[in-house]
Length: 359
Image (cartoon, rainbow, N blue to C red; front, side, top):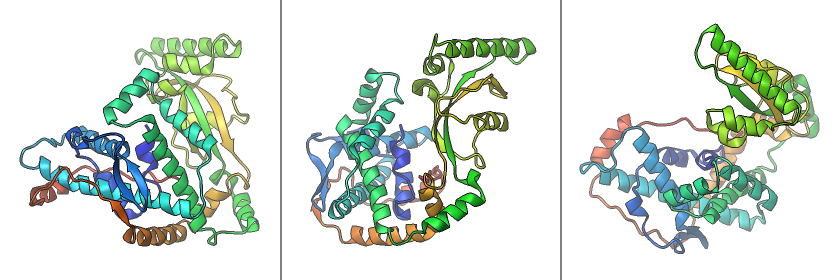
């Protein structure tokens, strides 16, 4: 799922970025209550209980994945109390952003919202797997949509607040023309045929399979997506080979052989003419989408040139709004402890993650 990544974008103030990293220890037992009851109401914005449940369960999984026992009788309760407080801070910010967007007359594009929801569902093999995930994380599809809507509103609010911190079209075009490959972005999908061994025979067999499936694609016998679902072993198996991110050639995250072949594609839906060998196996590459020309990448140029100034301006604006937020209905805390000393000591070795800023 992308939800947790999208919520750690450049538009979130640093203290809550840290909170998001630490949001990692509330147990399912702390998520009791009716799904119809709001977890909190801030600035007249009701935060669905399922939204808080999502962060709670994501946090639980996060710490567990690093071997931390949140059920430890000595430290578990203190973790729960600390992280519960930080989780409340996050949903408070979400509610404040939504209220500010409403005051500014900003709305989320319903078409984009529907597409984003479908993109989240595409991470699952089928609807049954999607429903199982919703049940496990104790939220509904409407709760997911509520989070996705917040993400769109936060982006719109960020641009609204920074509308006077911008550049002229002439300035943007000049920067783009100096080096277009710094800004043109492309999105790819791949099919990976992995050799069943590391000898010459295994690699030759993988190459033959890659050639065979390429012929099936070219003659219309099978789709690229069907073959990706059959052969890929990574997360792209469930997304038809879609690698998910838009990338530039100059900052490509892919190995050199893949990068060279991928960026040789020029037309959307074009597939590489022959299999591409890398250390992972033989790839077939498809160009899914591209954003080229200064008009289409103007926002990324503005953000690159003025990002720090715009982020500081937005954060100051948001911090003030959060400080002055009206809590109409506070969250009913599930965990209270007298001291967090043990947790504070243990936090020195608590695992952290890098921020994944949305660019």
